[in-house]
Image (cartoon, rainbow over all chains, first blue to last red):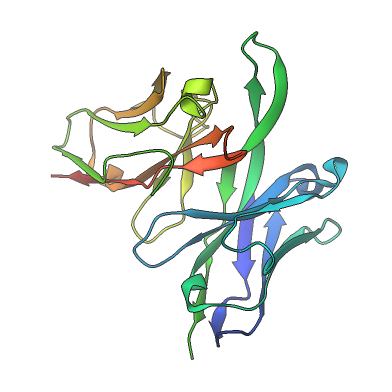
Length: 133
Length: 111
């Protein structure tokens, strides 16, 4: 069974750090890009960032709201993706989800493939992060 | 303010058909980028419902269908059931922002 399990959430004071883990099973973890999302209480989904697979250089991209504070990494030997969160703010309080990503091809006006972006085909159950003094 | 606009809420009686719209612009849906839909049941994680505009992952009932036209996309749910009560989100890509964009979500209430 394909599964993602997040862990590491909890209560943390503003300005402190926290590292979340996303442990994957049931598929070849190294073949996939992985994303992190969050959802503040009563709010919609917010994309946090993603990391590409090793084949694509394990490059990362982040939302502007977390750029410079959050870092995504991966350990393919352990099938784990990480979200290192530094300088936490109260507005980072949310449920954090990790996802397995699939490429969604993009075509130019002539119908030729030129790039891709990702959609999320598997979601973990989430872990709660509360930032409060 | 989400780049993709969804109605905050829709409702329907059991057995009815409802549609949820996802309105974008020429830099996202109108540029030809695919639209994907997610369902989030109360208290649970989101789940992929429709990918590539109109494709259903294995296990998703054929009561759910997706379509795209111009700068908008739609999710249709026919034969509405109580268990369909959930939040629904659309996703696409925006060339001006150079990244994925999401709708703000639509809460479906089954009357």
